[in-house]
Amino acid sequence: MKIYKVGLPFIGMSSLMLLMSPLANAAEMSNMDHSSMDMSGMDMSDMDHSSMDMSGNMSDMDHSGMDMSGDMSDMDHSGMDMSGDMSDMDHSGMDMSGDMSDMDHSGMDMSGMDHSKMDMSGMDHSKMDMSGMDHGSMDMSGTQGGKAPADARSPDYSNGVPYGRFGKPVMMDSLPLWGVSVETLGYQFENDQIDFEFDTWYGTDSNRVTLRSEGSAQTNDDKEIDSLTSLAYWKPLGIFWNGEAGIAYNTENDKSAIMAGIVGTAPYFVETDARAYLYTDGQVQLDLGTAYEWRLDQRWVVRPEVQLTAFSKDDTDNGITKGFNELETEVRLAYETLSRQLSPYVGFSYASALGDARDLRRQENVAVDSNSLTAGVMFWF
Image (cartoon, rainbow, N blue to C red; front, side):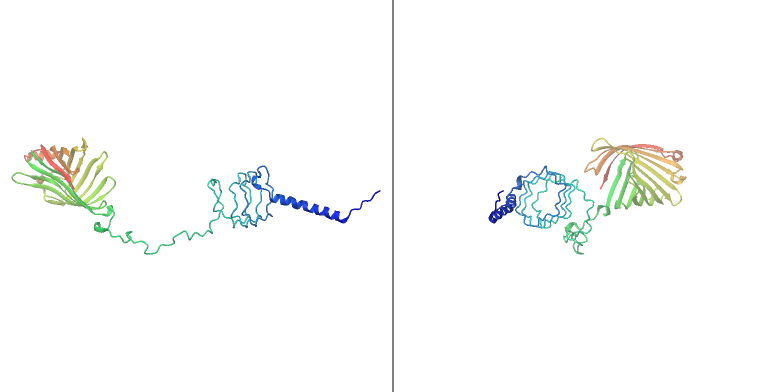
């Protein structure tokens, strides 16, 4: 049996070589390029990163080639310390298309990370659930202007700019206006008389004062004028109907009366008016009228009119009987000129006594029926 003796120098060299082997492997891994590492097939779901210390300077690390498309849903990053300087880290090429829905980042400290250069234009936020976020402690007082000072705006919104020669503007519904409408101003050739009917008003769309008069003036020797004039308050009752109430005076029987009426437009644009007059002697007169404008074209208009008059009791001194007393009709052909404000017309009129009024007129040798050609003008302004 041979015994080999090994000297101490040999043992020392062997131990040194064994110690240097791990150091060499570590040095080789430090120089490895991770950019081309494909981690798509690696299952990192059970990896625990809680003890990883990333507080150092990682600004020069290049992650552009890292493929993280694998399943990292169960990775726990809660203990990762990322407080280091990562401002120069390049994540532009990282593929993070994998499932990270269960990744826990609650404990990650990213206070030192610079996200200003991150491109998130392709990120889809439509499925992000923020229902559990608490915004109650957010201070947004700096985004609000606070309460405006008392003198920040002038009460009339003019900001100190004068209104000029036109004055301060007002709302149209509160601006008082006026108008004149002449429905009839014509001559009856058969009866040798001038018929007239006009209506004037002043006020707003909600409240007006109206002055209305209708009647006839004889052009023969006696020059007699018969008219019924009323001064009334006018107010809308609805979209198509208006109400009137006031006082009136009748020159034919020389009596005063209280007047009330409804004026408006019936279906199919039929102009309708109904007025009742209560005289001082208890007599009640009811006037019913209707008219319609049938347009032949943009200027020519055919206008038929009908009017009925009734009384509540007999008054033989003035040729009045109880019930309907008279029917008046007229058909006009008018031509609208001057922006439709002036309409010359020609027409045909017919008047007839009704009921007991016919017998009373025969007894007084007065015609019970009459007709005549008419010509005149209608206008408003």
